[in-house]
Structures are given as structure tokens and as C-alpha cells.
Length: 314
Image 1 (cartoon, rainbow, N blue to C red):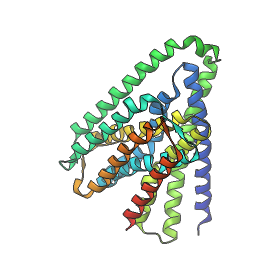
Image 2 (cartoon, rainbow, N blue to C red):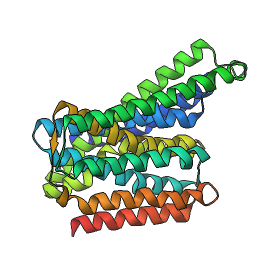
Image 3 (spheres, rainbow, N blue to C red):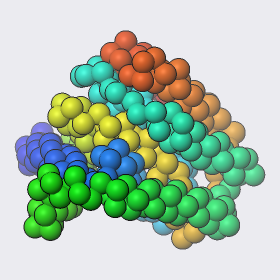
């Protein structure tokens, strides 16, 4: 056993913890100082940051002509985000859900997922398909930025009253960026070291890919959501997952397809795509129960994810 790799794995774990802690603290304080709802930060800034590993992995895969990995990584990550991460977070503490999530963000996530499936039906995601997805992301961001500016102007007086000065804002913005960098770096260290350790133990490449790539690129979302939940920032936790799934499809697939069109046999992914949609639609009735994702519902999501992973191995 190479103890150096174990050391890198532990270092990555520490990076995940402190990165998530600093990003959640910095982003939530920054949102308050600007008069912006934390959920908006979760849906945009935090979601983009935690989706960066998926973007890096998918870009690398497409340059190595592994289009299936590029697309499979996104499908697997979106399933893990809901089944594993929301499931675990709800088990830690029930997650409060804002009405805007049910009325706007969740339908957008489901709509983006359905558009992704439709675009895959001809066996490829072309440059134009990627452009369509990325244009949708720009419209989504423009909507939230406009709402954030409006919200900030309306709450300017109260935000100033809470001590949200320019120095504090700069410090919190820096804390958010440093936390995001630690989060991404820690995730990469854990995945790289984990792969070496797994190979040393004789675990197959297929198992490594299924167990580490999709889950590994979702580690930032997992760390951020758990830390957010523990700090009673469930709006950031839920917003992070919904926003990350939107970014994974519209930003990651969109940008990757614009760099190099993706080709894949959609028939080989129909079960995974169906499961991705099943998890997405399951959130609607779960979140409607008192606008809380409770521990029982979290357990159901986590159990469903575990069954999915077992099915993949079989």
C-alpha cells in the first residue's frame, strides 16, 4: 500500500471540509450583506463552483474521444446529486424548501433534463445543440441576476444596517472564492488518490469508473450541502443541488458540445436517463409535504440511489 496516496486522500478530505465550510459561510454572509436571498447564491455562484469538476472531467473525456464518459459523468452526477446528496443531507437534518424551488427552479431542472434527452435521440449533441443549451443557461443566469439586483436595491437599507460594508463584502467574496478553490482541489486529490488506492487493491477499472468518477465529481456538492445543512442554511443546500443539475446539463454539456460535438448510442443509456428523470420527478411530491424534505424522504432517495449502484454492478 502506498501511504503517500493515503496522505493525499486525507489532504483532499480536509480540503473538502474547510473549502465547503468557508464557501458556505462566505457566500451566505455575502448574500445577506448585498440584500440577496442565500438561495439565489446557492442556485448560481455555489452551483457553478461545485459543477466545475464535472466540466473538467467531461472536457478531458471528450478530448480523449471518450464521449460516453463525458455524457455518462453528467447523468451519473445528476442522479448522485439527488439520490445520494439530498438523501444524506435530509437524513442529517430535514431540509426546508422555498416555494420558488417548486414553482420555478425544479420545473427548469426537469425541463433542461427533458431537452437533454430529446437532443440525445439522434445519437449526438451537436454544436447547435450545445449552443441551445448554453443559451438557456445564459437566460437562466440573466433572470437570476436581474432578480438579485432588484432584491439588493430593495433591501439596501436593511443590508447596510446589518454591517454589510465594502470591506466585509470583499472579505466574504474572497472567503467564497478560496473555499471554492479548496473544495475543487480537495475533490480532485481525493479522486486521484482513490483511483490509485483502488488499483493497488485490485479493484476493476469499471468499478473505479462507476464508483469514483460520477460520485467523485459530486463530492463538492456533497460537502457543501452537508455543511450548509449543519449550519441551518438549507436554502443553500437545496439550491446548490438544483442549480448544479441545471449547470451540469446547460453549462457542462453545452460548452463541451460547442468545443467538440458529442456522439453516443442513446440506447445504451436509456435506463440511466429514465432513472435520472425518476429521481427528478420524485422531488415534486417529496418537497410538497410541508415544503420540507424530511428524513423519511431522504432515506427513500438514498435507498433508491444504493439500489441503482447495486444494479450497475450486477
